[in-house]
Length: 368
Image (cartoon, rainbow, N blue to C red; front, side, top):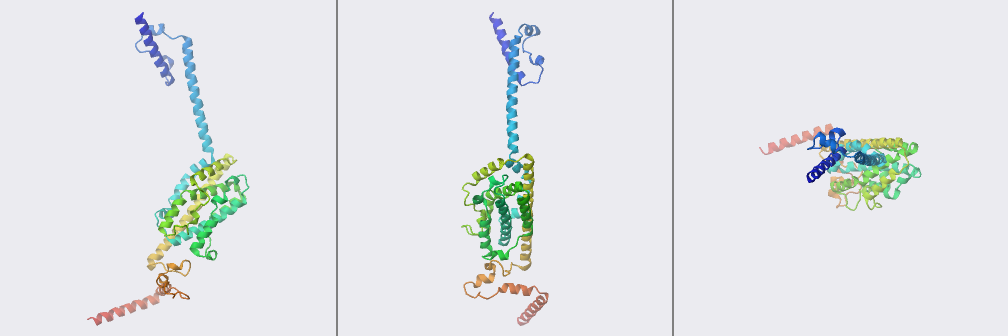
């Protein structure tokens, strides 16, 4: 009796093991029901009751059904998350974002290799871009596809850029500057969208403001250090969001508002497409600035040092630095500019060269 009980216990333990194996096996029931240490006769005699087998099958099916439901719920949640506009924009613009970050202008900027004149041109492009963007945002502040994203106090940059332009160009700065060609194309696109397809305006707002709240803060510190700008914020007001206490929390709020917009999938796809265009326009501006930087570098190499041209910051002039404490600047022009203008004329270069040669000959004769 005892040996039979032990044998039966051993068999049921092995059956339980096989039943557990069945739950994760693709083998047929016949092959998976093999019990180690028992022959065909023993298996036939000690085969479980059909009701017990039925219960095991039902349990197995119940586990599989539960797993399917959980898997389906996770898949549905992922699909809903990927349908969120913020996620679609993040994934859909990743490649364009990487290309923009790898333009030569941005890479040089991040290394601190930027001249003040180039930074002024960049600020000018930003001024015209944000003027257009905020004009169209104001026009569409009640449009259902944009109204929840209207944050003039927190985000608008035109007023801050006006202060930066005054710092770099002086009070009459509007008379001195014009919209760069690449920025003009961007401005025209923004106006078109605002007046004809306002549901796509979110693409430009997202591209600009979310970037300003993120990487823009890094650029501010780089500019202050590289250009020796005041730590009090003059010249970098654009990067200062006085009414945003926590940038990370505000970006989360903005994305939540974007996701709550009542838009169909087709419109969301068009917004992603427009956001990629926005990145392209920004890259065109960066490339134009890079070309301007190359021109400045070429002029510096050709002429030895940059010459003040009578416009913008007079303090760049070497003559100004030497004479500013003598009160001799009033009504006078920069002699460096005059000298360089003279030296650029071939005839005068020949005369100068001949004079130097003659002076050298006289000195040689004198010391013989």
